[in-house]
Image (cartoon, rainbow, N blue to C red; front, side, top):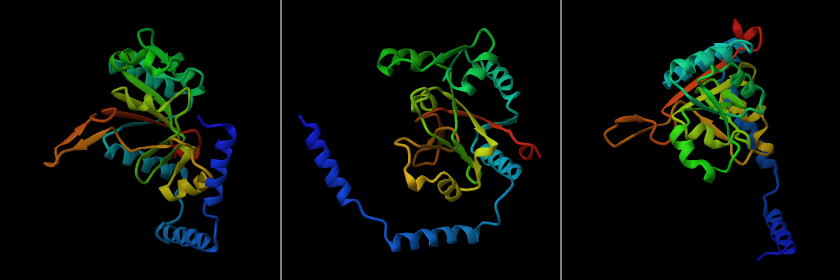
Length: 233
């Protein structure tokens, strides 16, 4: 059994062995930035990012809607009812989760992730029809959602239910992965579990037969919250 002193000594050795930033690293960063900037035709306005994100997601077989902050909960509630969803996993403590839960019709139950998975695994896998998450940001060029799971909305919410419903705000969209990493300062320290989601789960065999839902949700719905005047143009 390790002691606090042994732990600190081990961490101290790891910190001492970590490579220090060097002029060569800074030069490499500049070269990478230059590589992407010379191939990028300016930075699109928010409206252009929304259009690109929507087109890329649709190309990946996701269903996409654009709606304002006041409108998307009712829109999603209607779509969920039409899809036959009866139990929706979400974070009721979050602003978006509470808004969606309040908009749901009586026959759709909002379920919070408030127990260890061991306590309700059979129920989770057998009775939850959809999971709702809020993306940290989006990458328009590839239609990618950047999701940072937390205690109220762990990775399970976007992985286990057959339908993943995601909200991403237009103001958080980036043109490409390089701009996302730079704007969000990923180099300063990333979350331990940052998930990039591009379309529903899919896989193919050696005969190139494509199947959806083999390793996660077989359907992906995305609402782009057009929360700025420019985004709606």
